[in-house]
Length: 69
Picture 1 (tube, rainbow, N blue to C red):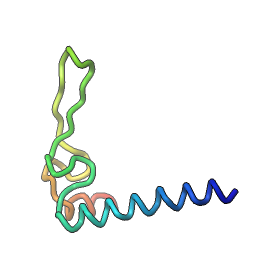
Picture 2 (cartoon, rainbow, N blue to C red; picture 1 turned 30 degrees about the vertical axis):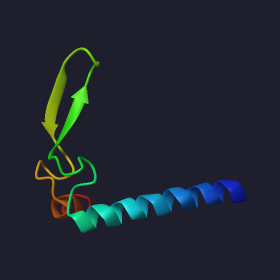
Picture 3 (cartoon, one colour; picture 1 turned 135 degrees about the vertical axis):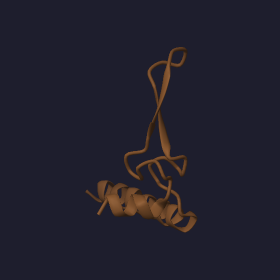
Picture 4 (cartoon, rainbow, N blue to C red; picture 1 turned 180 degrees about the horizontal axis):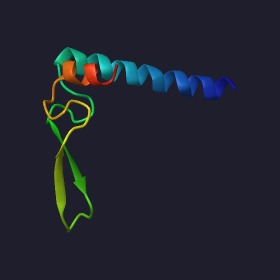
């Protein structure tokens, strides 16, 4: 059980570090501040852009934080 707990701790620490970095930069963690996500069906076919559901297309951390409360 110690191995599983250490892996869980490592993942949680990594997630907290990423969230702290995104908050410091002020960008949405879902879309990395782009305001949109790219859905690729195939490498050689079509790609569709759509607004990020986390920040509603703004790319800001504050909007993402409000939507995820």
